[in-house]
Image (tube, rainbow, N blue to C red; front, side, top):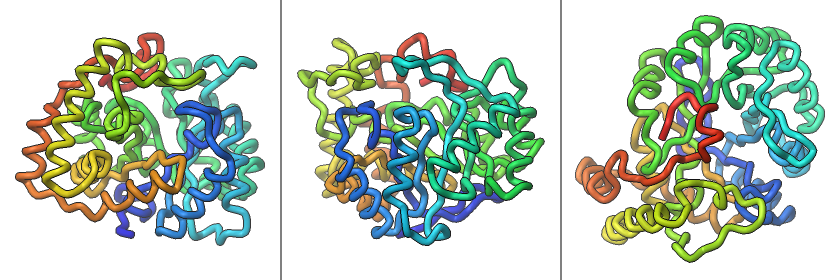
Length: 332
């Protein structure tokens, strides 16, 4: 497994991380607990060292699942990246963000207990809390770093100005944000800012939530609770257009001797050494398909061919429903 360093002040991690959200709560279909745990074990065996979760993923279930999967493992053999602050109701409806300093300490205490560990490697607010200055939130996490409960500070889905303000309080290891062939808004301001400041990027949604996995079809119906049932990019009219882009990418992948998913992952990894793709695999089969993408070295001609197949800005539909777009630091 190749490695990358998350920014000038961050940790060295595997060249791809494991995104665990889909293993709990049915956001992308009903998960299998035993298979999820086996997938975590397979990822560790393959050399994956970065595991990403959120304290609100299935109301804490995801952290408990990871605690079970990681039990007995050398704590220094993997890194846990945890997002916090997303509020939920009894029906799992979203309720905004709470990033007050007292909330930071509270959320962290619960996460440490559920995960069965004495520290989180990278701790980050899931979204920007418009009611709390980012300086106060990062300042509270900084106190947890000084107390030994957190190793590094991260951010998620914030704009360039917020990154600068946060980094002035304490060095930011990485910013987690959606980045794929279909979601490239990060390239305008955020990515140049990260490079200027020496901050890494952990990219989620690298397969467009399955849209560019090579397995989604226009007639596919998302199940109950599946995020994609509400996603504009999967809606009728948009999905057909977007799948035509996937078919163009499939032809490039065929010439390269890889799958569509592998090519899409390799493209994200090729955008910079400071970028670590998060593979949201829920099964060992999907993990086994994804990881060989890290061995694909894309030449300038390959990248140009991919760009012709899926030009920047060619995706149709927002990446989130309109009600949630306002919570993002960057658009599509």
